[in-house]
Image (cartoon, rainbow, N blue to C red; front, side, top):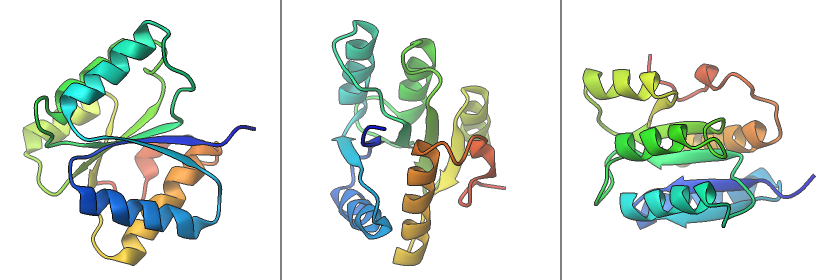
Length: 147
């Protein structure tokens, strides 16, 4: 089995740093690709559509509030592309309206509260690795899911 690839689409460099640290503490190999805005994320989707990018990520962690294009636009684009449409997408947000939460679910994502504190971030990192290993097949039961 190849090294799991996790795609993070997040514009906050501190959040990326902490997530990388948490993933390192899990003790499993991983590859992390980071995109910092919606425009770069849509370019990533287009490259997969054209077959110019491999391998596909096993999970995508997507910030809802991104510069240039928001997370809902990115999620919709991901779901329209067969090479990516099956991938678990966990949408992180510190704030989301009920309408945004509904759109996330309609588009096949899971709405997560952004975890705060290292223990919660480590739990998220463990869950990302578990998804990549195939140990979590129903991502709607995820620990940080909004209720």
